[in-house]
Length: 275
Length: 343
Ligand SMILES: Nc1ncnc2c1ncn2[C@@H]1O[C@H](COP(=O)(O)OP(=O)(O)OP(=O)(O)O)[C@@H](O)[C@H]1O
Ligand SMILES: [Mg+2]
Image (cartoon, chains in turn yellow, green):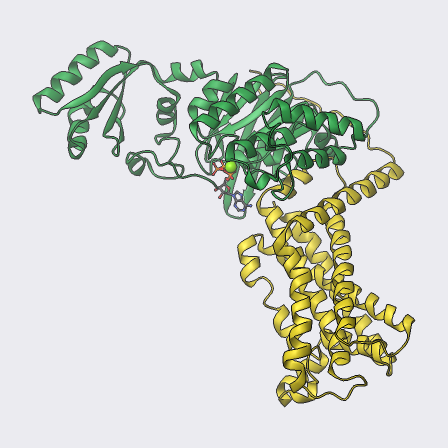
């Protein structure tokens, strides 16, 4: 064996490939990881349950069980009131998969393996995000189809309807950044599964998603009225059913941009540190 | 496969580590580690739980930046050119990084895609590795249903997709049953015979003895010994007298009886009632003396005999505690080896 201390060695310099090549290979890696995550999702009954079956159950439950008892002043009745709310709620809960999958992959060493490979650092998180976005599109469209089957109709034209769907997806993606951070910060699949997403319950249920805020006690109204989920749902309702668009649009944009501005860097930092 | 142009030549060792320190807050995981692995050699990094093995591997595979010191892999600095290091290494970490929802073949082919192999090469490579690691039959089943040994083999296969020049295996057999362990050794030996440089960590002395050309023993973040298995055994000097006490509760008494035969305290596995005494040189005269003393107190033994020192003895001689006890103080360690592990 050589004596490490008596023989100073000079490291070799290795040139990096040109920028365009780095971008091209990063894009290829993101595409590969997107496919990988979607394949995992399709093979995992629990993920399918959370992103498809549970939302559909919620639609039916609220439409037929609770719906009759919730009076709303909306054209077309409760089902029209409900659908934008339930779409937003489901989009938020779909981020459960993001948190669980990240925590699991971190815990199992999958992410360490990726990071020891010649791959753009950003590829793992971006691949995840792009797969989650596609998943969200599927979730939202399935709920919408079920909604149509149980009587929901857009009241405000096609373009506004499409915008509502887009807003729901953007909202879901932004919530994914919070969940992604939670998953990476907690790093433990079981903990994430049991309490990593409790914050989603007050946020989605103490909102305008299922009931008019006026029906809540005063002290809750203050929170429910001003929190981001309500703001986004109000805007989605305005798009789906008609009504003033301006105010909620701004508020939603600010909220979503604000959340992303806080949680994207936090998630990236947690990703860098976690090992 | 590599994205950089011409490969710079390097005639130094495949792995070179100099004075590497790494702390996690208060915990000093590495306190000045030096390592050299020559090309085509196998280095066994041996140490108990918490010794710093995984931390060392993570520094070498660019997953953790050292606080101080230098680490080169094929001459490439892990801090200054981590991308260049990642291009030539393979890693199988302490926990298997396979994705359980995917089949063995899918796991391998996705890995090939991430190394930018073309479709044909990707498929061929996956097929080759599945065959080589005896996973052909299970290739198209989700890996969730694989046994521990199969998962480990697939994990190793994953780290070989890119034909790495230097391979890092962190406790490749921990948690495997003896049969799977032997299978894994076979696979690793074959791999090494094809010229791959390998750094492997282990808590098992016999594993390092079996697989490694050179062994570096670390404890509490420091190298405490280095050399071939034979070098290390010579260090203990002399033979080991060993016996089992029939009446387990008289083990302490037996230890008392033979204590004076050696300069160092006998090591004891209380659960098995086993006592090992390192005797300087003359094994047979010490054996006679042992028999005499135990007989005088009517302590019955079985399996009494002399043997050459094992690496376990080396470890005891070097650290004052057995390999399995980790941070346990020497006195406590004498209560015997536990099989618990995992960081
Ligand atoms: N991320 C971390 N944060 C804090 N402490 C850590 C971290 N990683 C390792 N340590 C500590 O550093 C020390 C060395 O850990 P390391 O994982 O390198 O040991 P090891 O030799 O691999 O042990 P094992 O056989 O249990 O895998 C231990 O005391 C461990 O608790
Ligand atoms: Mg370890």
